[in-house]
Each structure stands twice: as C-alpha cells, then as structure tokens.
Image (cartoon, rainbow over the protein chains, first blue to last red):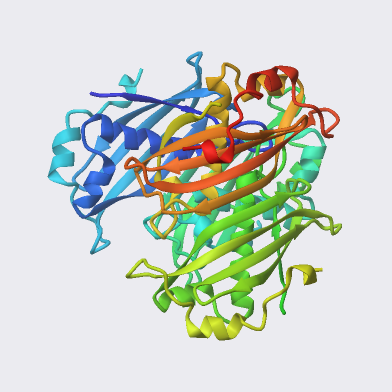
Length: 141
Length: 141
Length: 141
Length: 141
C-alpha cells in the first residue's frame, strides 16, 4: 500500500471564465500525479517507455466536489487501485490547503507495445514495483 | 429524442507526443458538443447564463476506443441522456470519418445560481426545450 | 496575394478567470489559421509532412488589442508575410463579429527534415503554391 | 537587479505530436515564471488583484531555440526588463538541465483597474517592490 502526494499551484492557464479550474484540466493534474508516483518509486514513466511500451488511457472517471481556485495549492494524492497483467488503474484525490476534497477520479491505463501498438503485458519491473502497492478503495483515507 | 452532430478538425495543439489527441482534450470536444447542442435548439448556453445560472460539471466519464489523429475530422454526436430538476446529463460519441468510434462519454452538469453559487432548478425555458429530447442509452445508434 | 479567413467560436476551455481568452490560446487560433490557409490552397499541412518535412515555429509575436470573449465568433485572417528558401512567415489578424481587431501576430516557421531534424528547403510544391501569395505588411487591410 | 529561477517538469499534456512542447504552451511556462517571480519578492500576484487591478498581456514575443522534451526539467529564468507607470515587461529564458537555451521571450503587461477596465497606474507597493529589480537586456547572463 502506497499513497503518493504532490502539490501543484493553479495558474491562470488552468482556469476558465467561471474563475475556477476548467474541468478538463484536472486530467492534467491526474497525469502529474501518476507521473510523480512512478518517479517516487524510483523509476520514471519515461524509463518504462524506453523499454518499448506505452501506457494509454482506456477510461477516465472524475467527480468534482468543490472548485479549485486560482493560485491555490492543490495536493494530488495518487495510488494504484487495480493491476492486471496488461492494465493498471490509478486513483486520485485532490485536496486544497484546508484538506477539502476538490475532486476524485480514476484512470485505467492499458499497456501496449510501442511497435505493435497492440496490448502487451506490463514490463516485469513495473509489475514487481507496483504489485504490493495496490490500495483498496476503502483504504484511501 | 434528438442527437446533434458537429465536426472538429484535430490540431497539433490537441495532440501529445504519442501522436494522438491527449486524453484530457476530449473533454474540450465534449464541451463543444454540448455548446452546439444548445445552439442547435435555438438558445445558446451563453443565453442561459444571462438568466443567472451556471451549469457546472459534477461528474465525467470517458472511454477511449481508438485514437483521434492529427488533422483528422472528428464527428461529435451529443445527446441528453438524463434530466432532473437541477441536473442534466449529456452523452457523447466521437467518430472518425470512416465511422469508427473513437471515444464515448458522459458529463453530468449541475445547475447553480450565479449569485448564490448553490444548486438551483434548471431554467424553465431550458427544461421545456430539452425534456422531450432525452435519449435512452440503448437508442444512441 | 491571398488572405484566408476562417472562424472559430470561443469555448470555456479557451478562457481564463479574467473571463476572456487566455493569452496563450491565441497561438492555438494562429495554428488553426495557418492550417486552414494551406487547405484552402488545395494541400493540407499534413500532406507536406508526408513528404518528409516539418515546419517548426522559430519565432512568435503577438499584440493583444481587445479581449475575445466566451461564445464569441472570432474571424482569423491569415496570410504569408515572407518566404525564404527554408522559412515561411505567417501574419494573422483576429477580429470579432463587429470587425473589431482583437489580436494580431506573426509566426516564423522553419522547415526541417523529419529524419535529419536539420534545416531543409521548403518542398518545391509548397514554394510554387505560396510564392505569389505573399502579402506586404501594408496590404493586409 | 533580480533574476528568479523556478523549474517545471514537461508533461504529456504540454507536448504535441512532434514529441516536444507545443509552441503555445511556453506561454504557460512564462506565466509560471512571472507568478513565482512576484511570490519570491514576498507578494503574490493574487494579492495585487485583491487591490483592484489586473495585469493583462499586451504583447508577447518568443524565440524558440531548441525543443523542450517530455519529462525534461526546464529551468524558467524570469526578470523584469522594463517598468513604466502603467506597464511592466518581463523577460524569460528557458534552459534544460544541461544549461542549453530552449526558448527566450518577453511579455508586456498593462495594468488596468478591475472595475473600470481602463489603464491604471501599477499599485505603489508593486512599483516599490520592482523598481530596483529591473535587469538590462545585456545583463541577463
């Protein structure tokens, strides 16, 4: 079990005319979360790509609880919620500085071979690294 | 029952280094779909905002089937899948020129008062306009 | 001499918390302008890429005169302001529906070989297509 | 004289199908640079907005020297290159980890009153804070 935390600061670029982060830009925050998750375990996602695979997003789900505002620091909590031989699902929770939940979501990623562009097994090294890190949904707090 | 169709052309700006549309940018396409849906019914979403309400995204779900590529024309099919007194759910299906399904998704929007920033009933005019347009999930093809 | 016009509608995704288009997103509008410019001449930029070249942006300049607002239709006027053996400069002018100038700018693009990633001559076909279309700065109105 | 440095890590979201950062997304990096510049001096830009002003971008210039790549750490060097009663110009230089210059640019910002939406003097506190920090063009290295 492992939950990673990183922080981003909301830019004008992230906001829309409602004065808060545009709903699509949370997916950018999710990406930052999962990228830094891998790095925290000692291997960057870019390293895995050099092994000849890509992780492509197969499915996304997000629930928006409260708006993230300009210049606010947002904590991105990231964990792995599920792993199979070819797929890996990340869970996310975004909180503001007062610990208020702003957004939660999941992204399901499928491993594909960079040459074949067809489903492939997760690299062994990735599997070894993450298999004991999976967090059950009810344990994310 | 009403399904709206509009078309976008994929820009470099939409793509990422995998050579295809970045997963977060499909939410931009969804926004275009629902904006043009309202316009096709004779009222722009901007008109509704002038009535003192906002529709904020409460929940998003997307499934990615095949990548949308640079310079490809993407058809965005948009319909309303559910309406309650304070919420409206849009369904989307994105197809390429050959009719291949690229992505499907839903966005649940909640109506809030622009001044109170609290849940509010959908404007009567919006409700009158959409209530007989709802498309059951199994009827989207 | 040739000036191309195309139109975009401003989305929430384009705006920021000031209620107007984010300054960086005008570069997306510039991209749309130059892409549709080529298509209007009968060849897509994607076609030229298939010939083994890339046009990379070397320099950008933009002046912002008045904000583009949500749901506004923006006319993008695009022309070629300069061509050399390896470079091509586009000029842009963005207007709203009342003809008010919102933004003007230029992008200088350098041709590079997709394999060598080094400067290369513009494809002959591109050169033949654009050489008599160049518009002197004082002739853009 | 003061030159501020901050670092960003390139995400998939920042890149385009050429495998490098999309030219428009450098303007996002510029925004991060100037926002953190103010914070480093002890006042956030958000603080100044609370005083009733906005800084809107009047002009942008950028020169692209070498592409920023996925997962690369980019150093953003930011300084003030010019100040008048109502305007402030920032200079930027982006470097990769090896110190190679990726991009340089300037943004000219005009101060406007948030209520009047007309040109206004920079807040006295901002002026006091920045007036001795201006860096002449030839002194940025």
